[in-house]
Length: 182
Image (cartoon, rainbow, N blue to C red; front, side):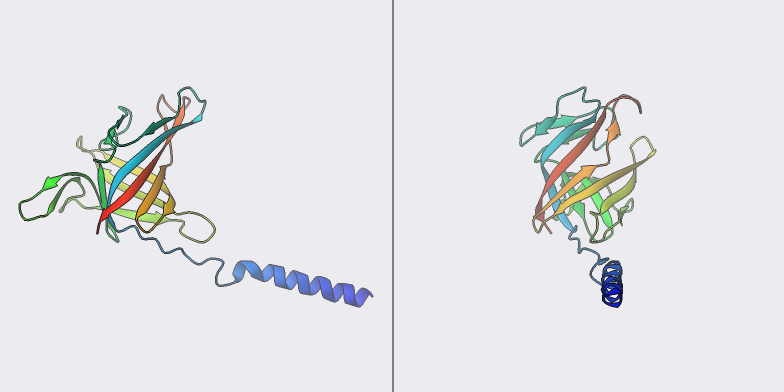
């Protein structure tokens, strides 16, 4: 009886200890970030000290926050565009040239903005992080959790900000993006 119990225990331990090392356990997800997106909805949530109401911004409204660096200080819903390829990101579409080329406020050549994808595996959602130069000449780093990466949509959640200093209220912005072009 002891041999059977010992054998059964050994088999269970061997099988359960192999799970983290199986090939499918640490596989990376295939992200499809490339394309041109428009912010179709923006949700601002107070996650710490709940001093202000949560806000939902939809088509025709504009999110304004003087504590965030441009271009994220003013986001007109359904008029704020972001374009990504496999390495770089461009933000805030200003217009189009007569030849059909997009003109971007941030990320236009030769001032490309390269992004990193962090933590992309089957255990957790990935983070999108990039640093860009502001109009004032400073460097601003933005970090977003990729909550959903659909075929024609993308949902990004900011890592949060303290709008009244580090001991004040913390807010998180969730941007729902809809793909509008390649």
